[in-house]
Length: 131
Length: 163
Image 1 (cartoon, rainbow over the protein chains, first blue to last red):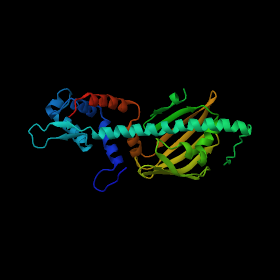
Image 2 (tube, rainbow over the protein chains, first blue to last red):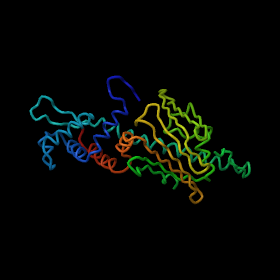
Image 3 (cartoon, helix red, strand yellow):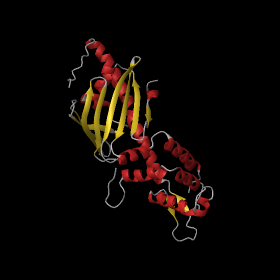
Image 4 (cartoon, rainbow over the protein chains, first blue to last red):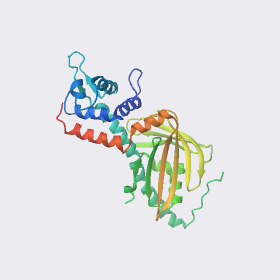
C-alpha cells in the first residue's frame, strides 16, 4: 500500500469509492455511464429528479474519481472512470481471499494435529489459565 | 463440504462476520487460534505472505501483535490489540487495530467456537466502535446489497466495448 502526501491513501480512496457507491441513484448513474458518456440532462431524464439534484450526485462521483467531466464543452458530459471500482473490488476480494486462503491452510494444520495427537495418545488437556 | 461453510456477512450496520466450520475438535481449533506457533502457520492470507511477528499473551488485558511481510516485495502489514474476555475453548473478545487503518479507531473482535457435529464452527464478528468506523464498514458492504449492485455494475463494465 502506498502512502503519499498530496494524494489519497488507498484506504481514503476506498472510503470515497464506497461512500459514492452507497447510494442507489449514484449506482444507477454509473450503470448508465457504463453505456457511454451523458450530459446532466440525459442523466436526469430516467430519474424523477431535478438536474441540480443529479449534479450533486455527479459531484460526489467526481470527488471519488469514479467519473470525469468535460470542463470546456457546453454539455459537460460525464464519463465513467472504472479504475476506483477495480480497486474497491480488489479490496473486497482481498478481504475474502485472506480468510479463504488462511482457512484452507488451517484445515491442513488441523488434520496434521489430529493425526499427530493420535500418536501421543489422547492427552489434550488445556493449560489456559483461568481469570 | 467444510470450505463451503465459509461465509462473510454483515449482521448489522456495525458488524462484519466471518464464519467457517472446521473438521476438528473444538480444543484443536481453539489452540490453532490462540497459540502463536500454530497461528503463524496458517493466518497468512494469500500465498506470498509470512508472519514476522506473532505474539499472543492470552489473558485478560494481555496483548497480541501480528506483523506480516510479503516475501516478494517486502511490504509489511501489522495489527494488534488487547484481550478483553477469554473463555477457554469457547470465546475470545479482543480489540483490533491495524497499523495502517482502513477504518478509524478500534474494532472489537469476538471469536466464538461452537461444536457442530464432529467439527467446530468458528465465527469472528468484528464490531466497529465509532459511528465513523461503522459507516466505513457499512460502506464496504461485503457480500450483500451494495456488493451485489456493484457486481451487476461490474458485469456491465466488463461487457462494454473497450474505450
